Length: 214
Image (cartoon, rainbow, N blue to C red):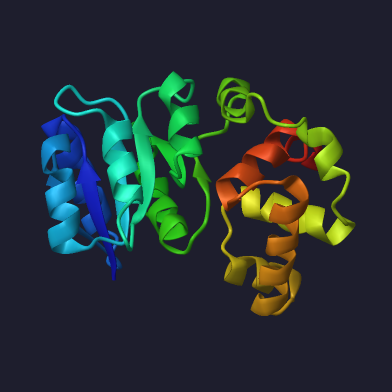
């Protein structure tokens, strides 16, 4: 059972996400709260995944994210936003968010995205825009040259990683061992000079690998 905490300032959003996710069978929304209650509830309930509103009137979503990431065993956090061009999204990704979901995400896809987050996958919904990518990677070495360092297999794995697949799912798709995929992912992160899967996914987007699939 995947334990989820929903944090949003709008009761309607909280209730809607709670009903949709609880209907999935393998997901339990352990609480749906406002921003001021988030830290206390995470400490009390220890959720696997936190869906966190990026803009709240009572407390800044980025502040909550920073505090959650500082916990000894932080949950996976994905940001909830109204627009995929929200200027706060790039900052949230730099701070360690595992991705972002639009609040009007199709209910049929929401449970799948939570499962992806729980398995250490990447969720960038519905599509990472150039605004978010450029904002996130501003000031970094251009990724086009860095991607050239990757082998053909590593590029193949990077694309699947960017699609949100976990190591186990990538292994099954490519008929590889999970340990082999982990080694490839580690090499990808090193060659791209990034520290996590979200950063690697954004690098893939910026380098055109996702558009080139055709």
